[in-house]
Amino acid sequence: MSERSKTDVITRRQLEKVGFNGDNPDWDIYEEETDDQAIQKLLKSKRGTDKQGKPEFIGVHKKSFTVLIVEDKLDTKKHKSPNCDNPTDYAVDGALHYASKLKDKYNVIAVGCSGDNEADYKVSSYVWMKDGINPELVSDKFLSPQDYLSVINKDKEKINQIRSTLRGFSRKYHNDLRDYAKLLEEQKPIFVGGVLTALTNPMFRQAYPACKGDPVQLANAMFNSVEEVLKDWIDDENKRQHILHSISFIKVHPTFTNPKHDILLNLIEDLDKNVYPLTAEDCCHLDMLTEFYREFIKYSGGDGKGLGMVMTPSHICELFAEMANLHEKSKILDICMGTAGFFVAGLSKMKPQFGNDNEALIKFQKNNLVGVEQQANMFTLSCINMLLRKCNPDNFYLGDCFNLKDQLKSHNCNVGFLNPPYSQKGENLKELDFVDNMLDCLVEGSLGFSIIPMSCALEKNKVKERLMKKHTLVAVMSMPDDLFYPVGVVPCIMVFKAHVPHNPNIETWFGYWKDDGHIKLKKEGRSDYYADHPDSTRQCWAEIKTKWVDMFLNQKEIPGISVKHKVMANDEWCVEAYVDTDYSTLKQDDFIEELKKYSVFKIVGNKCN
Image 1: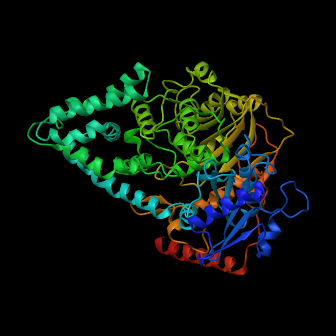
Image 2: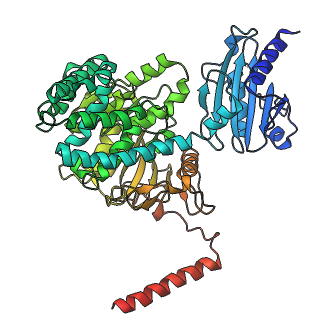
Image 3: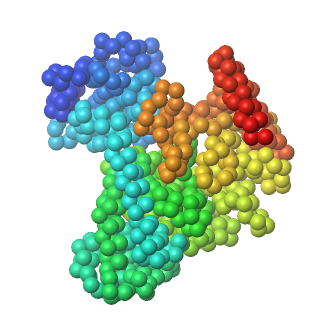
């Protein structure tokens, strides 16, 4: 038996052990070639020649568009190259190369293996979703067929259940904080964050029930628990003291320290039972704490202004992370970080890339997230949100992002995310001033992504001129009119390349991104409704996001949707000004439907008059 066939034998044994064998009625397993001509046609040589590419093993799922690709190598040193760009010589590189050829039509399970004996045998399992931009590392071993399919399904049912749990609980909890605790609006989210932080201390979580009947002791124990957690995670004494000061009201609040009742104990028990366990769930695509805050805001004045929390929608944070094509050397800057939603989305994007290399993930979390927040309570919330995800907020600054420019520059960030304050009246505090400041803090050639009012793209002002003298306008996307519902602002996304002056001969890409698949539901706000209720005529957010990211990264021009155009500071920076209307999909029924609507409008209008 040749040494190479030894590796094949081990791989075959591993596959059979987890359930990829002849007894599995749902899978066909092949060696090197499959009977499926569509798959064979897509598999090409790793060298790019006309020679047929042949992975060691191919699996075809009979009931879905899912394919298993396995590539193995004899030497464990040939498991994966540093940049994963040598498919001829490395196992993981080869598996992902084949997956890249198949992922336009199939969900692909791509596995790279190496080693000639069981003791040293290495495995890296990836999933590359159909039409996905990047593969996701899911395990350092072979998973069962069902486990791979569960990953492909993205644990959708689990995530939806978490969202539902948070929404239902937050409604009840808001009422409890209002009716029993008598907290101010700005104190409510701080209280929630403080309790969840205290609960991460195992000693407090075990001991707090014993404080029944002694609310003063409980309040002090909770505060001390938070202090201990902060000492473990934050070296900066000033930062720790600020967070502690924000939650110190708990120790002296008359409701919490009243010996006649156990309101504080009851509130802690509620969070411990209903929310804290969710922070441990490994749903990397869901920012559970921000989801909780977002629901909480709906019952604190409607739009979050009472809390100072008009947050970026979580799916837009996710979109930014995808558009930025983040990798292990990405260093993210957010100069108006709010509750750190962009950082949570960035970490969710990055986590699969690190796989089981926990040391590299911790290093990324510690060094590659740089943020600023001027509002004291929001700064506390952002730090807590990171701590609950076991992320050190060492590079978070409390203060004015304009005054902190020198410190921010020293971090050499190469990606910028921004949702600035809207409609500020002060001099040099307009939305584009924040965009300019963010770009100034990035290294040359970096991309800065911002979501700002569409009015910034339409009006003529000196800030647009200043921006173009220093930075290149790469792209502008018109977003849904009600994206920030119930706040009435029509937004757009702008993308600039930092420190590269805008060349008037280079075209900017404009996109019409008005339909994100979300609809407004009573008591729910904007919801990704079609993710749970498939409709042949409507796409859900996941499908739309994939399409948008592909359009942006490849600067595609699509009639009626996107266009490239040369613009300068005095021009309108929006797709509506330049895109041609696409009449190719219009039918006579569309014309008749519009006539019906117009007729109804005229009849109703006349009756009203």
